[in-house]
Image (cartoon, rainbow, N blue to C red; front, side, top):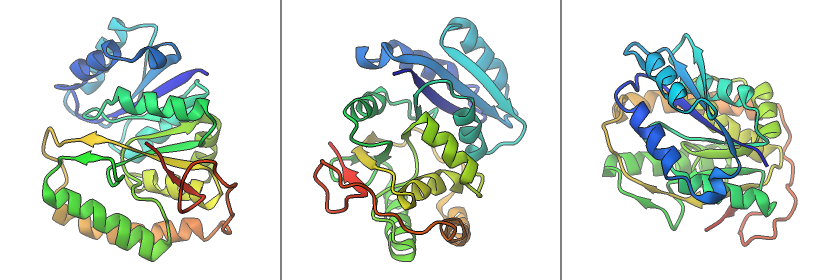
Length: 257
């Protein structure tokens, strides 16, 4: 196994160096022994983030790779990182949520061949979500109303941390039709629709800074994304995935520990 970590970075000049350094220096042994690269994808920053990326690269020249795209777009950044990835497996993390425990859990799942796609779920029964109430409510409504009721997705979360077999990640990039933030949800839904084994793992999360987009500004975007996701999934008939050995009410989505 050769492991890649993808970190999109947009206007993160104040936090990036400390976060990446702390992540590298606190890696569990099981992660450190297989981690071959951290791909930082700067996207459309206006605050000197790219300079900080290169500064971090100089500090860890054998581990850090820097990519840059001109437009600020979370979806395009993670897509670029996955396409550039050289490992056999990868994790997508966030600058304010560089969680080595999630990476370690993903590696264990891949080694045991339990799943090809791992989702860090804020709605997992064992998750500890200390974000503000309105953020937790929005997450619950989005996943239950828009994804489960409108689309039929049986999982509990699609946003945030993910781990994927690299070959699968690149295939999903090729067939995806959306961009920006909705792309991360489309990835998960495409994997589900194509019968890929997905396992959800719990997270411990708290909001360490205010989000750049308010809840009220997110609602119209959410309504538009449902139609885009339906158009994407319409291209593929439903495929029954192989029965998982893990415990689950649905063979497609496994709720792990």
